[in-house]
Length: 296
Image (cartoon, rainbow, N blue to C red; front, side, top):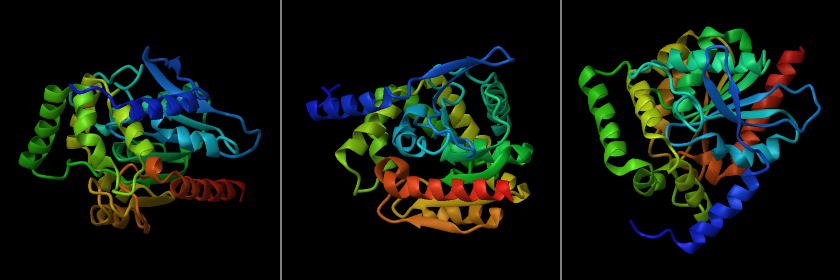
């Protein structure tokens, strides 16, 4: 494998230094499983906590730019999903969204978070939707960024093909190879070198077993069904140049949720990393409206 370019090393070091302000923590749940997460609670305000759920090739660390800005006005938390970071994997080899939503509920219970703004990116949107539909009283607002809908409503052939292709990739390439081959797909042509380095850094740290379970989750899930049953407030945003969950693919989810689609110019799938100002503004606005509705 080729050596990592020195400029990438420098970029990673800079981002890791920023990330050091929000060190990884770990909490043990009543079910005897661990969840690792990052948390910033510098604001003494009555604002609702913001809970961030990452996608299949990422982790809690990917949200560092949101921690830096949004953490000034409210508590912001991001977990490493089960099977990521130091979080205990779910038990099922081929899990459902409810398996992850159950752990999310336990984690919020352990942190005494009774109500929050819940944000899911990509695969994280599937978990967020499953949690919201079964725990609507806990969610003041559901914000989905480049949501993955899952293949649960597709034919068995489609589900198996999508699943097996992704499983073969992680088995053959490993996390580092996966990051080198797939990370560029996460961003638009406008992304900076720093954003590209940060996406690679996060993806190279996935754990193969947790990634495989998440792949099964993607094959089994049907976010459209959950959104059709959820009656709370939902917003959906996607990058105009997202090639993984493109705007046209998000339209079906938007229709099911009864909301509108916000398309962010010059952004790809990991828009919150490559266009942090635009996405952080979207998140902040959504949170403030959720705060206001709670006080009414």
